[in-house]
Image 1: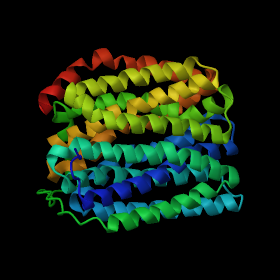
Image 2 (image 1 turned 180 degrees about the vertical axis):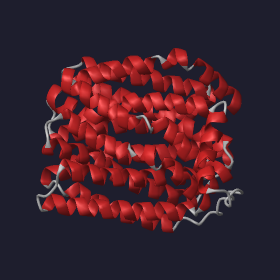
Image 3 (image 1 turned 60 degrees about the horizontal axis):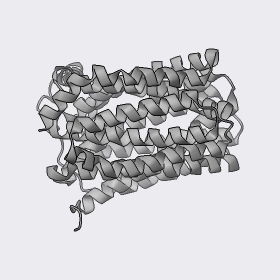
Image 4 (image 1 turned 90 degrees about the horizontal axis):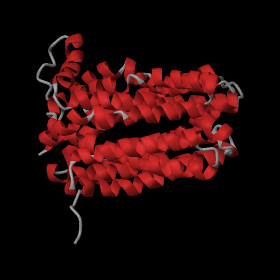
Length: 401
C-alpha cells in the first residue's frame, strides 16, 4: 500500500531543506577543520563554534517578530543570500591566505544568523503544505533529508573538498545557498501570518513569544530539556574535531566519514520514529533519544580505538531524529500560526542560548583535561533527564492524546 501523498509543494520545500542542509553539512566539517588548521588551541577552536551558535542568543527574539510580520519564505530567501555572500567572502580570504580565527568566527556568526531565520521560519511552512494528519510523516521526510545532507553526504564531501583546497567547501556552499533560493522561489507563497498585534511596540512583540513559551505547560519544560541537551551537546561538538584527530587518530577525511556514519544511522532511525510514536507514545521516542545520547557520549569518552568511535557515531545518529521529529510535531500541533514565528524563535532562544557557553566550557575542559572528559560529563548530565524529565513526558502524552 502506498504512503500518504504529500504533494508537489511539500517536495519543493523538501528540496530547499535538503539544499541548505547540504551546505550546513559542508560547514559542519569545513569550519572546525579550518579552525584546527589555523590554531591547535582547543579554546580557540571552540570559540569559532560558539560564534556559530551565538545568533540564537542575540538575534533570535527580534527575528521572531520579523517572521510573524513578514512572508517567511521571503525572509528565508534573504537569509540564504546573506549566507552565500558571507561564505563567498570567506572563500576569497582563504584563497588569498588572509584567513584568521577572528575572520572565520565572523563568517560562522553570519551563517548562524541565516540559520536562525531559516530554521525558525521554514517549519511553519510544512503545515501550510501538508494536512495535519500526516505531519509526523512529513517531518520524518524533512528530518531524513536534513540528516542525509547535513551528516551523511555533507561532512565526507566537505572533508574531501577541504583536502583538495581549503576554500572549496565554502565555494560549493555558496552554490547551495543559491540553489536553496531557487527552490524556495518555486514553493507557493503561503498566506502572510496574521499577527493581530502588529501595531504594538516592537519591544512588546519581542516578549510575546517568550511569554507564550514560558506560560505553556508543554513548551516550557520541552525547551528547558532541549537547553540541557544543547548545552552539553555543543560542548562536545565544539571539541569533536580535537577528539577525533588527537584521541582516535583520524585524518581530515576520516573525521568527515565519522560524521557521515552518524548521518546514515539518523536517516534509518528517522523512518522508525513515526512507528515508535504510533505503537507506543511521543514520550517514548524522547526517552529513546536520551538513552542513545547518553550511551554515545560514554563511548566517545571512554573509547580510544576507531571501532568505538564508529559505534558511538551510530548510536548518536539514533538520538537526533528520535527527539527532533517529535518535538517539531508537538510545536506544529499546539501553536497557532499567528504567533508561531515568535514562539519558534523564543523556543530556540530558551533552548539554544546555552550553546555558546557550552562551547566555551567544552573548549576549556578539553584544553585542561582532554576532550574525552567533555563527553563523559555530557553523558552523565543528559542521563539525568530520565528522572528529571518524567513530568515533561507525561504532559506531552496528555497534550498529544
